[in-house]
Every structure is written in structure tokens, then in C-alpha cells.
Length: 446
Image 1 (cartoon, rainbow, N blue to C red):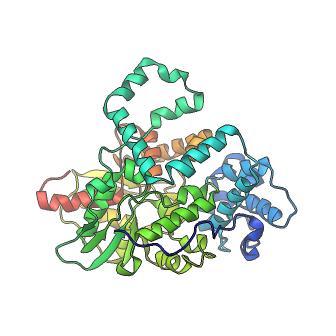
Image 2: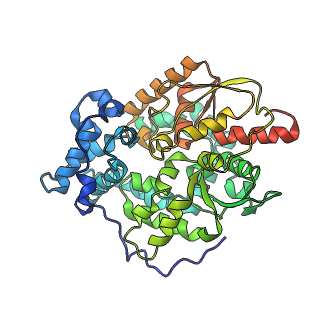
Image 3: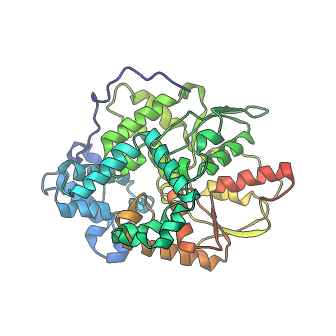
């Protein structure tokens, strides 16, 4: 579906990217009570004040006040933070840490204090090329699929050629996700209608989700259809801009948001559905990103009002509980993606969905809301700390005795799957629900 964009030049508006430009009430809101400290993974690791939310906010305020220069040390501290937002759940003052966090990283990038030629190249390639141009990301995804499906990947691994790579890339290579043969646009028609329509919703296919978990997108549409939702899925959507915003490129994040808004006819939709927690946390705040953009301000506010996580929407409309088991009887547990529980305040709804599925014995996970270490690209930029959190999560999962782990974010899915290894399956809650609906028709568990 092609929607004509408003007359607007992307060069006319640039988001605020300095801490001093923010409303000062946001900067000075922290009471320094310390209730965030026990929830912060980096503070618990080091017990150093600057590695805590309270300490980071103190640094941000000093920069906003002009009492501190933006230095390399400040930049490294802002990127040591996972951005897991556990502190926002614990905070009694309602500090808007996500806004501070994104603007602090934007400040770091504006001053270029972390510059190296390699870092600049990789940021340009990923943020300004791959994740800004859907055709390019899909082309790379297709080449990666061919590399994996042809057996060349296994051959390269056996040959020992990977030993020629730098150590950081060599260590990352085994965790490369498997790309799907078909992307979302091949699996989902632009408009799909149920036999009896109650709602009309838009479907977000994402970027990593589209390449690696297009089957989850298909499952999401199936679950929506089973609950009376007509689903509109615009073609070649691309990245929503969350990756850019979380990495200090607010200008490109705003450009991605505008492109996303142009693809959807919001007035005709009851909701816009996402199934990726990290994207959803960002998608619900387009109005903050575009608050000074007169051409998009109103549409961004309408978008925020209609954006829904899939589990949130299903519970909101009173989803139909399936009558057939999705699988043989199985013990399962649930890891709460940080940007779902802390970023969006969605915790009960996924559990309601999971507990409604026949054949699944639900077991609560110890420290279910603790970060698994994925945190966007954190497992790439901070592999040592990410690995510790991954191991902690795997230990907690093993204690449950579950053979199935549900989680609602692609980064968490990959991080946990790599952490628990074979023998434990990781699935999205909506995939389990869709499988149960399909089992009703076929009479066979998947």
C-alpha cells in the first residue's frame, strides 16, 4: 500500500541531539535515591557509581549544565550501559531514562569522541546503508542465505579459513543467525482478511525479524486472522529506526520514522502491530522523536496511540483461547524481553497468551526480567559482559527443567538459543498460539 507522504524535506528538521537542548525537567528529575542500583547489570558487575543509572544521569546533567566536557570516557560509559531500562521500572520518580540515554549517545556521536576509522566505517555501513535501505538489507540477507543453504558456510568453517579473521569477528561467526529462505513479503499478502472481520490492523515486519524470523511474522498474521483482524502489511518496510536511536543517530532514526509513517494509512487502522519488543519500545515514541517536526507531529502522535505489541493487542481484544494442543505436553518457561517489560510495561499479557495454550506446563523463570545480554548490538560491542549475562540466563532456564523457552524479541531469541544450546527450543509466544490454532484445523500437533 503506497501512501503519498506530506510535502516535506528531510533536511528541514533535525532532532535535538544535545543534552542541553532537552527540557531541563527531564535532566534534573533523578532524586539520586539509589533504588535503581540493585536492578542495573553493569553496576552489579562493578559496584562503581558511574556504572549505575544514577551515576550516568549525574554525568549527563553535568554536561547539560556545562560543568563537564564530553570526553571519550563519557562516551565509553554511555555505551557500557545496556539500555535494558530495568532502572525505569524501579524508579519511583518516573525518570525518562530512555530519552536521556538516547540523547546522551547522540551527544557522544555529535562530539565524535569515540572516533576510529573502523568504527566510523561500520556505523556508516550499518546505520546509514544496510539498515536505512531495505533493498540493500534484503540483498545482503539473500546472499547470506545462499552462503548458508549451499553448504559453503559449513565448508568454510571446516577449512580453517576463519582463523584468518580478527579475534572479535572469529568469535562472533558461530552465532550468525540462520536467514530464512523466504522473507515476509513472500509469506504474507499485502491484505489478508478473516471470514468475519472485527478489526483492521497494520502489520510491521521489521528488519532482522524479516530476514531471520519471517515465520514469526507469518504466525503473527495467522493469530490476528484467527481473532477477526484484517491485516494490512505494506511491502518492503525496512527498519523502524530503533537501532539508529539506540546508537545515537537520531537524525537517521527520524528519517526512518517518517518513512514508516508514510507507508501506513493510520486513519483506516484500529492498531499497528509489532511482535519485536525492542522495536515496539521505540515505535511507541515516534511523537517524542518528531515533536518539533510540523509535517509529521500529528501523524506521529496518532501512530503512538495505535502502536501495539501483539500480546498486548490480543489481550485487549479478548483473544480466543485455542482448543487444541500446539505440541505434545511440554514444560515451558518465559523470558521477559527488557524492552517489553521495562520499556513498554507489558508483562502479564504474554503470560496470558502462553497459559491459554493447551499442552504447555508453564513454569516461572527465576530473574525473568533480568537482561540476557543481547541488548541490541551489545553482545557485539561488549562481548564479555554480554556473555556473563547470557550464562546467568542459561543457568536460570536450566533450573526450570523446561524444554521450551518463550520470548518476544529477536535479539533475546538468538542470545538465549546460543546460550542454552541444543535440547531446549526457543519460540515466540505468538508462534505457539498460531500453532495451536492450526492444530485445531489439522487435528495434529506441530
